Length: 140
View 1 (cartoon, rainbow, N blue to C red):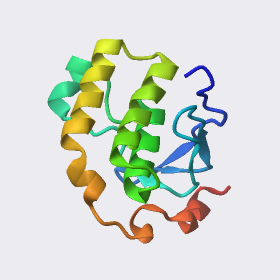
View 2: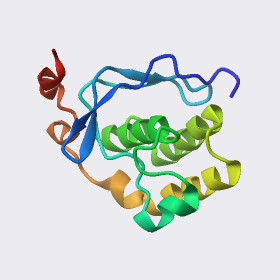
View 3: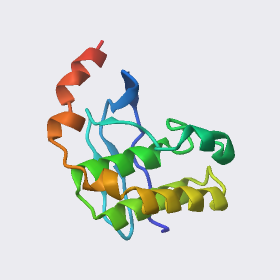
């Protein structure tokens, strides 16, 4: 994982209760290839049940997990990687960033691995999660 890196800054805006990427966001993964989340991607952050927020010490849009969450959400919605790869990339981003203790990362990874199948298998139309025309609302 020595070459894993995040070369761009994650810039988001509010989109109702969700968030939207305001510029492309890139994660370079040594073993999985580059992942580029495009501008205009609408996402819901880390899917952490409210009861687990204090247990894990993070909330869905917490800066400690937001990069891993947006990439994971993009991979689940776009299907550009397998579920296994998407889940592993989620873990590796958290590992690479080093903001979360390893035991808590493993809990989060185990949860997406065990319970993410329904979300990954959901059929999406691009218009449901990729809305670049919505970016006009953020241009000054």
